[in-house]
Image 1 (cartoon, rainbow, N blue to C red):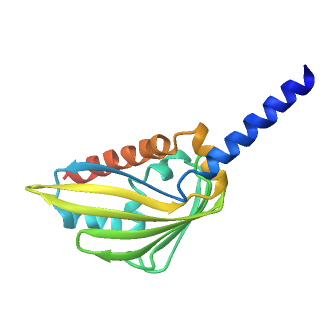
Image 2 (image 1 turned 45 degrees about the horizontal axis):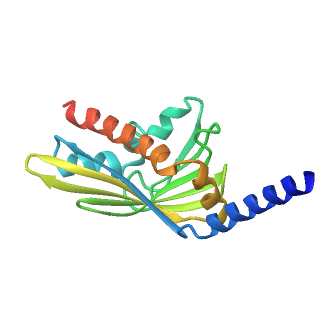
Length: 175
């Protein structure tokens, strides 16, 4: 009986590992929100790291987070390094590209996991409003594939993106 239970358990774990290995090697997630503000106003709130952190949901998750800015104040090369609690982790965010209607960033995390992801903010005019899309793409190493079986990363990170876009909307529509 004990051998049978052990065999079934090993078979289940092997099946889980094989299933995880078949998951996609990359991920993409995004959220969009219509904001009653012109694209240039929103661009300024995204393209400047200090302005970005006034509405960044991750900056709000840990009030004791340590952060430092380097490079130019805005645009490519503007960088924010951070170290926070387990909800935030440790890493850096750097603006890699900036053009009217779009800002690209690179997120490099060293804790809790080492990852590098590309982030894109796209600003699409919609009459007097702007549709802001926050997207993130990156590699899915095996551990992320395995975790993804038990944790819905799209929903978890998506909630943060939704909260950030709501904060950006409040800030941009205020005045």
